[in-house]
Image (cartoon, rainbow, N blue to C red):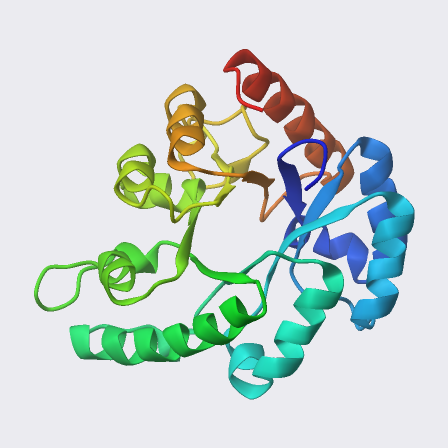
Length: 254
C-alpha cells in the first residue's frame, strides 16, 4: 500500500488522460498523489502501465471496470488487474437498460455479480460496486436496489458519498450498516450552490467530521478523491489532496 491512504479516481482527469495518459500521471505524482484508481487504461497495455506506475512511485488503489468488460472478458480483466497490482476493483456504473426495477431483476444481477466476484477473489482481488443515485430508488416491495445488492451479493460496497448525500441518504448510516464492506470510500463533496454540482474535497456541504471517523472505524483503507466536473483538473485535485490530508490528520486517521 502507498505511504498514505489517499488516491485519485482518474475519471477526474479524463480530459487530460485522453491526450497524454502517462504525462498526466506524471503531473499527478508531482502534485503529490501516490495512488490512483483507474477508469480505463487509455489503450496502454497493463504491463506497460505497471512500468510507468513503478517509475513514478504510484500504487494502483483499484480500478473501475465496466459491466461489459467483466461480462465479455472476465479472465482478461482479472489478468490486467493483477498485472497492475490492484487489490480492489469496482463495477462503476450500470447503463439504464441494465438497472433493475424489481426484486427479481436485482436477484438476476446479483447472481452475475457474485460469479464475477468469485473469479476475482480467486485471483486475490476484491470486487465491489460503486453507487450513483438510482440505487437508492425503491423497487416494488419498498426495499432499495442498494439494500438488495447488499443483501444478495458478497461484493464490497464502494460508497460514493456525494451521490448518497445528493439523493438524501445518510452516508454515515450506510457506512455503519455495511461496516467491513467499504474498504474504499469515494470522498466526493457536494457543492453548497444547491445545483447538485460536486466540489473540491472540504469545500462542499458533506460533514466529513462525521463521515471519515465512521469510515475509519468500519475498516476503510482508501479515501478516493473524485470530481466529475472539476473547474481545473490539476488545481482542484491538488486542493482536494491538501484538504483531505489536513482533515485526516486533524481527525487522527492514518
